[in-house]
Length: 439
Image (cartoon, rainbow, N blue to C red; front, side, top):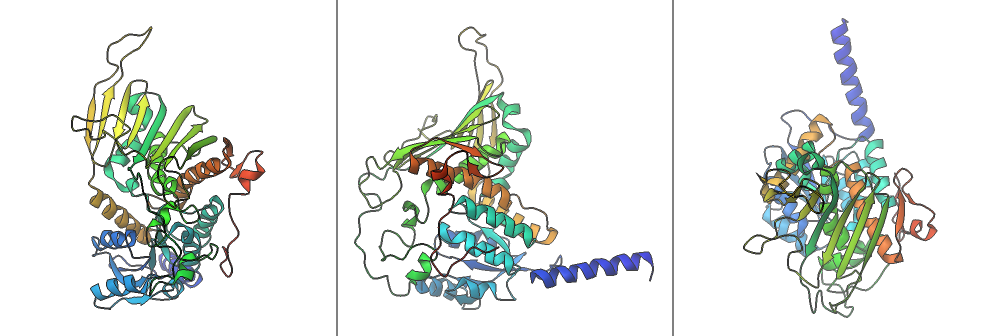
């Protein structure tokens, strides 16, 4: 056996060992990746569309949803060819599934992602990555332990114009950035998600499975299928929208984690059953010397950042530098020059600039494509699980600050709140049996 043959045989042997340990199939350049989708209503359906735009790289082999009516409807669309089940564990047990796409409510993400990694599946998990900070760290540990590709659904990381901004850096584009802010506004006054009395769950919905690790309770129409995002046990708008913008701003500015967080807000105007605020302001301070803010407003819906002549917001994010201000959306990037104020020269400090954006449909297609490509190369995806965890942590810290009505000092290395037992007690919760978080 010559050196070249020995090297080839060794690599093949290692690959075979890797497959036997993880249970994963070795993907050739021409192999279509077999995907199972867990949670296929609303966002799950949108992700199926994004992945199917990469049909040359993937095939849909399994569908899962706790609502049999939703499952049947989607299953019929595909001529009942994919495997269909209400139990995600049956998807993970299948040999004809290489990867799973998880679009279930937030409180399910950790268990399903970790179990998928243990089963040798790569994972695309919708944002927010987790509902507790402890869960997020365990998801990172699982991805690394089982050598899995885990892409988080912060899809802006696959948009060319956002990648360009991150490569150049916010400070290089507009001078020293000391303040960055973003918002989500939608006027829900007066009735919001409404008020409902408990009822038996609709026929076909496995309500106990929907609740999963969360406490048992009666079904309400304004919780499932989508309105769970206004209930703190299952989600939050800080996580739903905040993670997107905080992730993008953190990326563009090259920040890893804040050192302190303070959030304030409440249910000030909307009369409904929600357990999260209709008005919230979260402020994050970084050791580098800048503030980052996210505003959630559902009592007023007009734009909160500068607008154009048609009263459309110039940006979903605003990065304020010493030389200019940058407004960023999926549609475009616009940079306006700063002028000196008191005691300084009033001339413009830079020229205005504008860059085209990336259509949302293209962003989601590219994000799915990046995940599929990384399954072959085994390189970290654009929105690797560690990055998703860091950005999700920011939103979850804001929720803890809001719950305690306290400013929190954050140690990103130990992932604990400094000198605050009450806050650290909220980094996780006790799961309802039989569900466990085991890496």
